Figure 1 (cartoon, rainbow, N blue to C red):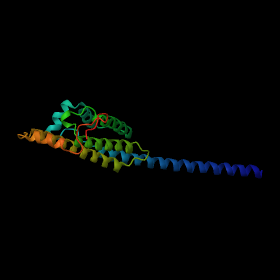
Figure 2 (figure 1 turned 60 degrees about the horizontal axis):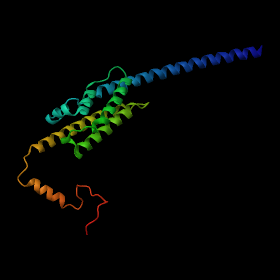
Figure 3 (figure 1 turned 90 degrees about the vertical axis):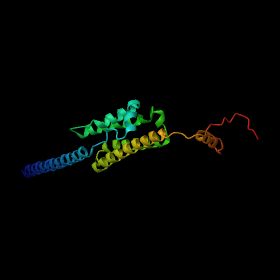
Figure 4 (figure 1 turned 135 degrees about the horizontal axis):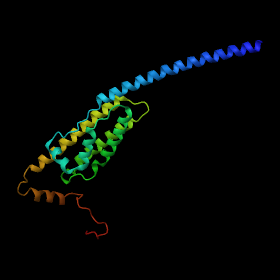
Amino acid sequence: MKYNITIFFFLIFILFSCKNDNQKRIAENKKEIKKREIIFKNIEKGWVFYDTPITEASEKSIATWNELRMFLAELAQKPKKTIGAFQQKSKALSKKALVLNDNIPLEFSKPQIKSRISTLITKVRLLDLFINLDNIPDKKVTQLVAEINLELVSLQRQMDKIVEKSKIPVEEGESDLLKMMDTTRAIPNTPIDPNLPRVE
């Protein structure tokens, strides 16, 4: 008899402890859902990209630079509804950014442009990394969106500078002077074949 009463009380104790665990779990799930909703709202509010060209040079280059046009088109499409949509969009942006170095128009194939593209790629890949973490740092994500916008502006302004410089006419004798400067450098721009005999 005592044995049955002990088992009965033990079962009641287990039943109440399971009920408390379920209530705790439900409360934790509600907190997690609310936290995710706040993160989603913050990211959705901060996800604003400069997807249209801001300079005349970048506007004209879009016609010939397919990779830049596709990247800006990808930026223009804002994801909706879920964090998963933002994660997929960041992956797509990362892929489009990686190919920006391919087929750069000849007039823009300069170190200033390439360095800005590299920085832009790094920022986009960081965005992809942070938004795909288990615990998403929404403030860092929105900060990276702002930094990507700054890099886009910097890239487009540099493109504009290059176009403006190309419009300046070359003065008489300037090209000859540039050639002479190139040949008198300690390290010439033309590669030297190590197999050729050295003249001493």
